[in-house]
Image (cartoon, one colour):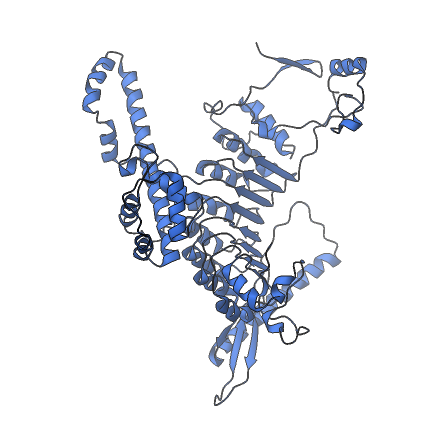
Length: 583
């Protein structure tokens, strides 16, 4: 029987309870119906649209009612010392009366978090339809929700129009490839029955053509899943191979570390033993080591999932990888993440943390960043799998897009080479007199553009122009700096130092394997004035802190002394503002 509830005197059936797969039979429209009146409140619009299409609403989007203690006497503080006796007659009267007809839902926002729950594509599709009209949420967070590529595309589609969301946070979300298509040869191979299935197929032929069609569809789906597994495994092993090569120079050098310890290459290792051995010999640890173990213990390497592998299997897997393809601008996962960086998007802050983002995904993402999405101010890629190659891709994009204010790359795999690449777009360069003439012309145009923007802003303020709705961030006029350096020694002509202006305020590289304190000292005075370079918990920070203890003492949120201020602390700061102290 359908449970009934009374509201405003009318019997109304309760919506169906959401379970995974309950909405799979629905075909959602691509846009809101013409008669749908959006309220601008996310959960209210989500539930209303579910009622229209007959979908079971996801509990994460439940409309929360505000319970008043005066009307509903059971609502009491949680502290036992504050509990009061409840009058049974008043409680019964409140339960019988039910909610008042004019009761309004509790005000939502500005933060909306979905944590550790499973979502389906229908729910994400409905969310993508109601998000453009949402005006009450500024921070949207999906943490440990296992969103696949298709769900992320739907989410990106909804972050458009007049949507009020400014910050999107996607955390602990493993990225799996979308289901691939099969070639004609693969389809024929999948549909070819084995010897054991011939007799079974003869018995099923009597059941009619529908049974055979169902079996064929199941075989094709299994073949596509098997192909995706192989592609995902190769992708994981390639990223692990690049990690090993970045840490030790080459696979040969890494394998010698096993030989130097007298390790038995054929000994069977369980997951814990494999992880310990890789950490002791190669210094690599974390979830990806266990993921590699599961791949080596899988069907691609002739095992039956017995929970053991050996180093010979690891060596054969890494050395047997096909030649690395060129940078793929059409990587499916990268294109999905790049859709959040679209220049027409509404996001000012994008955080993708602990989601396995690597060099492969960064190729399309860096290309999208190079298109100068001026709406975007902050990009956080904390605790992913970004190596020096990925850092180089981001550095190339930052040569073009100068509007990013915050870039977070902490707890990745960036070494000294990645540090050099990431700081290069922001450090001063020495140029000759011919190049200085070109720079002067460009700076003159930049100053004129900046003055025009300032005049337009002052005019709007004087006229009292009022703006309605959310205002998009426009391109910030940046003016480069050119400094003439007199000739020194036998030189007859001066040289010039050019510093390109940018909106960058903070670059975070904490907890990366950056080791050279000398490199850090050489880069510091060349950086942009007053911009923070955060290198906490890195070997280079520890070494430099031993030489300069004053850099490690101050833990307040005020700028630390620069290296150039060692002799004269009162001098104006030049270059990067280093933050080296621990958390």
